[in-house]
Length: 433
Image (cartoon, rainbow, N blue to C red; front, side, top):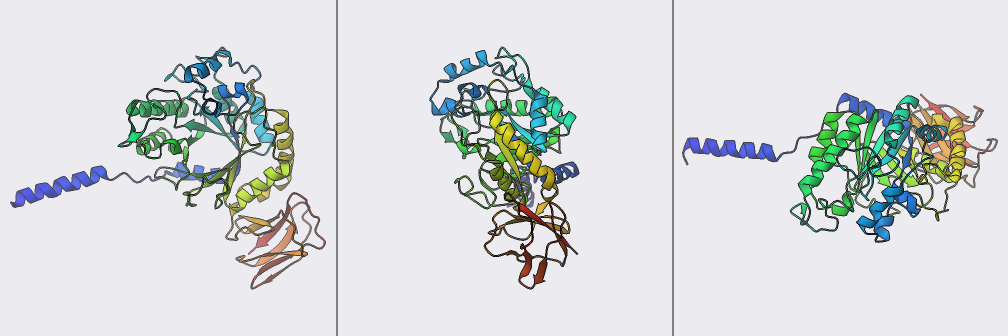
């Protein structure tokens, strides 16, 4: 082969290889700072709210009841949340000790709960309400120092270009117009990030409906980070984190657990972690669901998440009129009172090198560790194994009273004989060198 031809072949192969190699995502300094802040916040409010709330049977009612799309769309004609008050929602979150809110901007039914220009199927144009509640929420969150994240559904049960149920061939649905749908999502995401003040996160959901599809994540994630490099991108795909994502989420499971079956392919990575759970058994408002979690259960979930180095995102489904039901406000008020007294053992902490124990978990903030005893042992002491550093002092967090301890090769023994026990969570503060 002539030398010139060989050089041309090598040049072609090099260019072709470069074209096929995806750019590696390098988070900016602002993004890394936001990740740190995200981990410090620890507790967030998840809100599932849409026209499905009117039927009082959860957010999957259209799919589960096999309601035709054209019939389901009529719900928008009489959706009028006259009692919605963004200030009340934000105050509810603050009193509960929550530091951020993740709200459904668009769920699987395809209805946009914000004033989008990409489709008339939205709360401003398609309902008699003619108002944008997410703008109110964004402004109020910014005013009150609460971060706002937007949940965004990847799948759509109604749009023709998505073609729900169509088989995937070569990364695209056989029916529909996949490129059109991807462009639609990009345009809506641009609106959410540029129009609404203070948005700090995008929470994707629905990848699992089309695992073999080409979702164009490289383009979508790059667009988001171009519009605002600090924005945290997460995807509830139940898989290991993908290039371009900034936090890893676990649905209805603590990191490392797989009780629901969602986390079978989701190994814990190096990104900030978040676990989400419902306050009853439903995401969207369900009038028949009275399986309310107690304040103790919620506190334990929060503490167990923190002990595993994760945030806890607790979901509520507001009523169709925009009000949060009394059962939720009453329970979260108790949770908020507990956090007010014990917040230093949660906020700003990280999971320690000490694995969860039968009695509870350990959180850590630099040289200070917090042993959360949620299940009192039969013996009058607990053992904290593998603790690094010398313990200088141990005290009960609730009243700063001294707690007797002994440090040996196998770990630190904390003696509980004269300790005032909290039936929810007895927190022992350990100061190390």
